[in-house]
Length: 115
Image 1 (cartoon, helix red, strand yellow):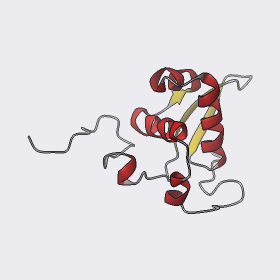
Image 2 (cartoon, one colour; image 1 turned 45 degrees about the vertical axis):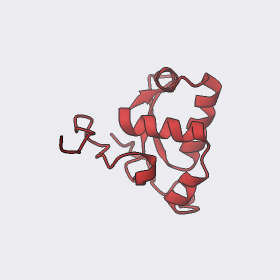
Image 3 (tube, one colour; image 1 turned 180 degrees about the vertical axis):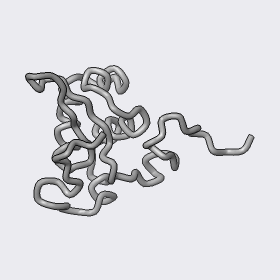
């Protein structure tokens, strides 16, 4: 589900091509992005468990990825403190960031090699 106010170009439009931006991310930011691509919607706490990164590192990675419109955030509850994150629908990870998988279908077999 994409929030109604979601803008794939970010608040002021794209600053640079997505692949160029991906090449500038830190290893922690790439790990968080890849985890969201494979797992789908996750909370910050779930990301911390999945990636085994410190909470502060996950929080900073999410902030950077969100600033560059690489992920989407949906808040829950009346106070807006609970949030889930997912890779933005317009972001397609290049092959060097993982196998060619349709990230929108969590039931897709990730191994496409014939046995």
